[in-house]
Image (cartoon, rainbow, N blue to C red; front, side):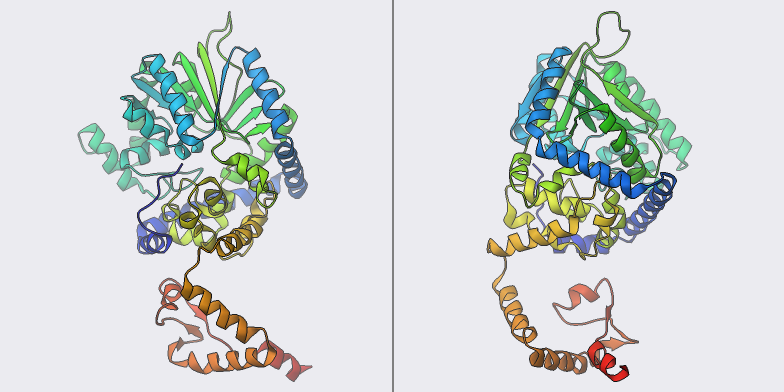
Length: 469
């Protein structure tokens, strides 16, 4: 489970809005990723048909998840692997910790994995006296900074090279230059020996293939392969929904995922693991464990309103088009999963809906997230349903309820509606500058502190229409 922040969304968002460096870095990266996605999708003919097929595959899996999980488990065991089922995040972290302790592990190397962030694995291992070394470059950076990821695909996107040089210099013991070749060379020098020293390697799992019991990782740095090649023990951690029936299905998702995530036709490394090293093989771990995490996914699966969210491929494309994410950054969400998909799944994964139920309101409901999702998750519809869930559960303030009762009273009749709009036009005048409301008292200031609000027109659209037709 995520660590509950001490500050609520409004405070976290305000901190993000006031962080000009983070906002500039975020906009730069998401623009590059989204533009890359657009170009890459154009190069794949019939992109929308690919999206439809990807959605069908993922939906079929969700509707038959018990069958494919059983098939996966059976085939992993046939390959000589061990399978562990974890109901809660802390159960999964405990299972992994115990495996490490059984092998007297002092050092663990990890590749990037959002589900291990979700279950707070690093903390559990460190509390057991085990050193955890993140080997993904971006994860290494934020680990040194003591920060969570700010994006699913580019977790350190909020950092610039000067900040990274400062972090690396503390490790080096001397001041490093800020150019990219120097920084990457330093990280390579530090990390390479860790693979040779570690007793256990831990990876995530982009998709598991049920028909063969295979685990796949899709990366650009090759560190996942290193984590599974040198240590004697390989532990793969996957959310229970990350399974596909066949390699043919994987081919479809592999066409969609890299294009949506980074604008690539295919990532640098697509790796497939089939249990521990077999007799006669020259590489691979001697022992393989697959940890399948539920952590309230079964509750999402059981709810027809929200099970579509389990189709997610964790590509991060919805982050890159979200106007809210662009302004406040990933840390403002307070959860491992930010952006539109995080605003959907975090309240569903977490136990405290009263607290996390605020996330679906961090959206303009513009629908851009739905339009870009490679597996056609209706994200904006799910956000509306979650907002409704928060209201019906009674997790709204008395003041908010009163305001909306007044709003409903004025807007349910045409006469009161026209009166309200005419009144608003005249009442707004002290606040309008060049056609926009640029400042105002609370609660209006919550909007105008970060953006302008279009002024209400003197004549309504209906009045203009009647006048000209």
